[in-house]
Image 1 (cartoon, rainbow, N blue to C red):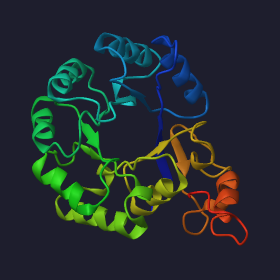
Image 2: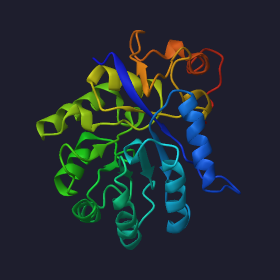
Image 3: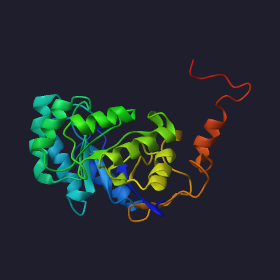
Length: 254
């Protein structure tokens, strides 16, 4: 059990009419809220513009270890390798989802040529899928990172079982940075001693963010003290979840 949890901001979105300097302004807003590490998007613009965005982000961060980038599985082989070559000199915290995580051949090729950490996992949902990645995709123990999304991976028990299965393969719990800035991920990071938790301040409505009394201090939040996941402390989400299956409330999924 961790007494405090390392959190980073998933942001750096592309916006209509945006310019590279926008990421610096966004990061400064997060820094004012107590965050120290951020992740920005790549792959939604030309490589030259993405590099300018990275330079702008680094201009307001202490060093490149405070910045990660996320391609959301955008690239095929040629572009993935091109980005890997361009990003490697920055020694970023990680390069996330450069390609489809089930393309083991390309994953292994990237791991062979890209020295800084790689990360992926939000599009993997089971223990076997993650084991296939680390066994067949060239994933490097104690270096690369696994980012499975807990709400999408068959629940808390299945997620914890995945962490234990990877530990038997030589992957420490600190290799896991769950995707999704939500209360479930935060509780799992604290309870299982994982590497850190993503945060999405100001986005995704009721489903984003942690409990209402969460305070971010120098990149950390204190471990939740409520029983279980602690949804009760997130008023907007708790009110929404109480309507699920409630008598007289129509099922909105149909």
